[in-house]
Image 1 (cartoon, rainbow, N blue to C red):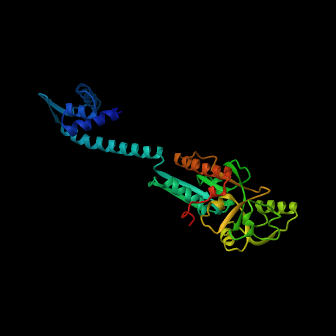
Image 2: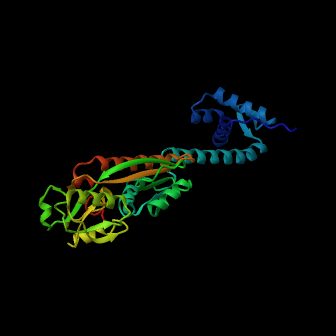
Image 3: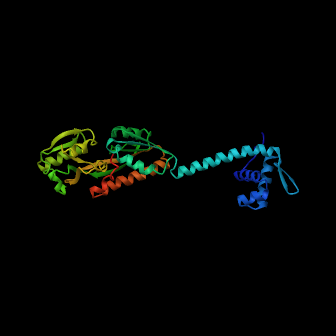
Length: 316
């Protein structure tokens, strides 16, 4: 079996510096090592290779032809190593890579893009895939381990997903010209018979609202039946209805035609961050998860409705 030299990175780096400077002493100064240390590394390298790389004559160092050939190989190895080290540094600093996010419609228009702006502003080499689908499809994308992070209405537990759930209390969206805007808290009796925009009957928020109205002896007047709450704010701003909306919908609004008021009894919108259970998360995905988790926790705990909304200009 042919002998394979056991070369080290230090030997290659030292050799390249000696070839660059043409001197053991100059290479030592550039590398921050003593002249004897550099000489020892070169001697060990020649010993591993089995032939001399330099001719030493009265203190002068002359590269052999083999040294010039070896320099090309050593430089290529070191360049690739340096490139890999730089790439790994960028990965560890969340400066390179890609993150795949699946999101339900209510958060895909502004809430998630706003977080991506914050996350990617100083990360020009990071790519993002933002997929907008229904909550059920988001679940499947995460359960199939295809996407890194999902945001959806809280699903039933599945062994293929990690689920972090948040309960976001809903608020009432009213035209600022609505007389009810003068009230700090709105109840079902205040909305008795008032035109409303609501989600479809099977949705948990609609079931909870109907129960609350029934217990208060108030009439539900659903003027608009919606599959998502995305159109709601335009309908409310136009004075066509009121609506009980989740906090993520509130967070998309930056106008002045709508006011938001607390609703009692409390109705919760249940939203979850989903992650694949059978695939390790990248450092980049974990960093975005932490940002998303913080934003969700802020919505969950914020009492002041104004603090949930986007700054002017970020609402589209």
